[in-house]
Length: 332
Image (cartoon, rainbow, N blue to C red):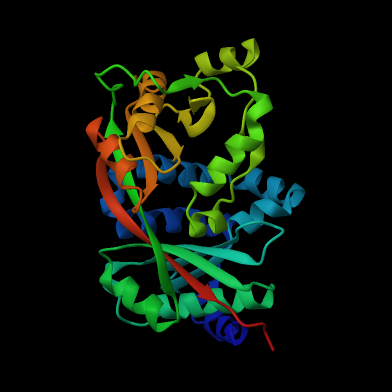
């Protein structure tokens, strides 16, 4: 049992134990920064700064998690300790309070401690925790070129069910050509929210639905208020969305969030061949994001037209993430 392992290793100063946000965040930030060094230049630095800020604000964090237990659940998982140092980590979280699907992320071990079975022990602890809390399915993402991780996960029963392409653009600009005349991009219309939601649902890959289920609540129906616009001018994140119509039918959606360091873009497009819908949405979205240092987006690897449209306006492929799933049996 993992609990017995934790007890036996706690006094020895090495081994596995549950993550404690109050004391582990800085060590986890150091570990992730080393283990995922290749990804840091695409917005990862801000995540590291946030983790270290939380570590410095430990008293406030303690008070907040006392008020909101969900905050502690957000920072749940296991760490591996060697000589008082965090050398391995796995983060676990329930995808949604109403589902039995869990997400595993940030599986990392320092290079000098690899090939000692630490990652496997962390994964086994995560599996046991998820089973005992009623989990029936685990999902994770892994770089397609990470052969060692693939070997580990496949040996534990995970199967690849799809892939996402992670793209980034530095200070992107809208397409130089005029948007297609047969595609009209408008502000959301509340009367058409069902049609927009059905498109968003169809355009989302099955595994992404497990991790981030499409929600109708995301579909805005009115422009930002004057107060919201004021906060945006003061540096708060700014969010916009646009709906693309063709012959009176919604054929695409774009969501953009503008931040000081790294902004995000999401495209939901029905089956297209020419890329006209994507280009019409990119005209609006990239005009809104034109002063952003870095924009990131993820696209299903099978959406070839959308990928070509993004690359045509300056997005570059960073990595391909394989989506893996492990069904769990009920605990004894």
